[in-house]
Image 1 (cartoon, helix red, strand yellow):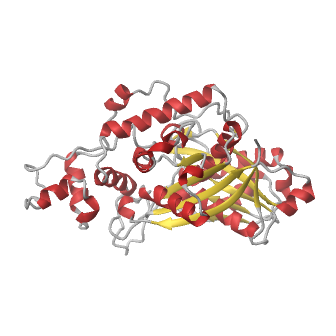
Image 2 (spheres, one colour):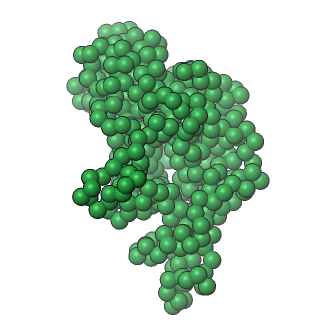
Image 3 (tube, rainbow, N blue to C red):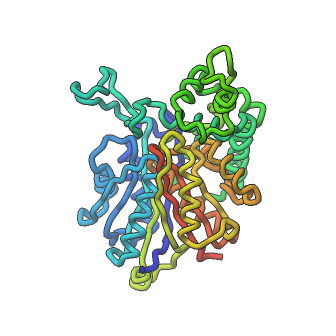
Length: 418
């Protein structure tokens, strides 16, 4: 395999739905960042492909549209990848594999998303899923067509592992505090570009505290959580849940009068909806020599994995573990873990499994603070990891991100700049 190097990359500020990029179509947001990428890295004019994730856009090969709007040569092909939240990381992994196989020397990978401009779609009238009002969230699993499938999976995962709201909220507070500190120290200045007059990531809450987090509204009612858990038939997976306790006591499934189930997911410990774009430039050793380039990091390995869709947040942990195993590494050898904090339960799962490594996890905050523009988040994680390794003098870093439908993508990175 050829070596694959990270030359650099850029991301936009991350906006809230209906926020700074509320009137900007996804392809225009992507094109604006791509233009800056071309200016900063002129070798991208010789790229042999552009691979980008996009999860809730208008469909079609929207990456090609964005590339043409950005002014890339028409000879550069483009491909759009939909692995939902893991789309950008999957795009990076595909580009990595193509360069590693010797099929390309310069590739652009990343993703972009606009939930503000997310279209409403519809099934054919003959489809049993058809509704007159249409839908915005695709079906991810055979057992549900719920538009809240990802939230439901996160709530189930919280209940399955017996977390408390206080535990989950603590990770949300941590994320905002660390992101605020990183912003004050201007840690991300080399990778964030202003487009359409943006000047900051909108999601970081300077005043986030345990008290404020405790006041945030719950995303489910108790009866809704009970309904979610009643659909789970594999009770051995729920060893710490109230449901299993009742089953062992011979009382069967809980009723309104038997068991109190506390909803755990809130507006604090679940990420908001966002707009954003992020891209990286990957090159081969041949490209380094040909264009006289200086690499920032080396991409060593990648991995994709699947888990039970009902507990999709577990995909981040499981995929990261699989990549470590594939790479022959122990967790203690990783200096920084950049896992996507779509939900605080992902952070809680990591901390529970690797308590001694908790300080290495998202040291500048994660998606609970910055935001999670689905199709772009994997590239955002990689950009943040690059800067963290560089500025904190780390050697090895691991990106991992869960995706809808019980999927995950992970990347292993080695810092070359100390």
